[in-house]
Image (tube, rainbow, N blue to C red; front, side, top):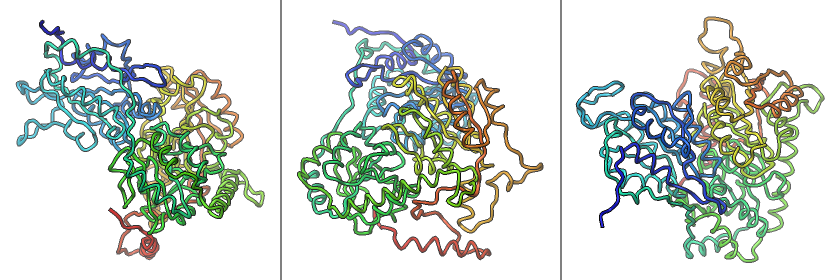
Length: 626
């Protein structure tokens, strides 16, 4: 009997296959690809655009304003959906494609699913050189699309329609695999998009995917348990992988049963509620004294779902040099870092298995007393840090911490918080008191300016499904706002409301702080220190946001901020609140571990030379590893 076939163009087959993929979440089936974002040009409008139009109900397409921000929105959606679903971004050839490179870096660094579909040069080369083609005389097969190879988990150029039969299943498996999850890039040559092929009908049969959960090896579990049983000062570092595995309950049960203090990474914020008695704060460069003091004294560290990046480890100075790390991670690359005892497996399955192997073990009472004391000191510091008045009763200048504390007080339990590069990630990480699990998205893996509003738009799309009556709150500095803000307009068009709090400190103030701390003079960071031809002035963010259809207002005090936030809550569309914060005072001072940055070994400046010596002095605590 002859195999049934469907004659489709390559673009039609690609879209049809995407529409046939589903995923089971909490016993319900949803479309694996929730739709996508697109800006059309000559490289994708005629063929891929035609295919997407015919599947616009199954795969809704949203028109973005910038290819980079479209892909960032897809990243924000994937993060909010805990990697269980993804969205795609499609671009024309040339600059539209290269605009997505930064977004691919975010997805790759954070192990998040993102599908990028970009036009490419003609395979036949008959019309070469074509519009937006970068010619390489020595390698005519090379295009700008090849630039994505360093920031993708799977990269392919579809040079024949039949190739989809092999490429698409591999691409999807990459997007859904817990260990290898990351961005996928498919280059779609403009001629091949329209070429037809007789595809087997079975290729498009609906398929339901499931979250793969890997059991840990019994010997690895046994080795890890034996080491933990000997611990006198154990500590758990909970990373973002705990949330992606949906293992927050298992984490809490493990910590409660064995009475082990827990600290959180930036990606792992909101793994525990703030009020949990074993939640001892965020760790690392932007952490808390409580977490860092415990980390420094811990003899065995159980790292769960973290890639142990330098902001977590203080460039590997946060721990005692002889501390043993036990690492639970679904990715073998992360599980074996720095002489860790690796336990390669899914956190949701592995944590209970390790708990059973530990039996009745609990941390010594003296260690728990220390943890309780550190936690109490952390709580007292936060209250003082977010206060608008000093201990002597005088007023403080407006600070990030005050803004964060005010929004924290007024927000609903299930509101979602989004922040990214600049000073706000550190301040949100240090000062936010978690009200609900998984409610904080601080993009600091790739530390990407511009993610905030775009990622907030995508996060709201995912958040709205689960919490239609709750809000997505975006904290953004003036620098990031100026870099990328057009998705305020996108969010109004799409009916995906956000509350955006713009903290204006007159430039890139956190980098100015690093510049000054390393002995350098303020230069090219704050607007007032740049080469400008006029007196520095503040941007009217309120009017700018209104011009894009949002509701907006400017406030001048914390009390006014709280009142404005109440109005934003009642708004039927994106609401922007702008205020000025101090660029020099009010930074959170607690919890800064040493962090390795390059400083000049020679300089004509006494301050720079002294700062170099002071900085290098911290290296004595640096743990050497592989």
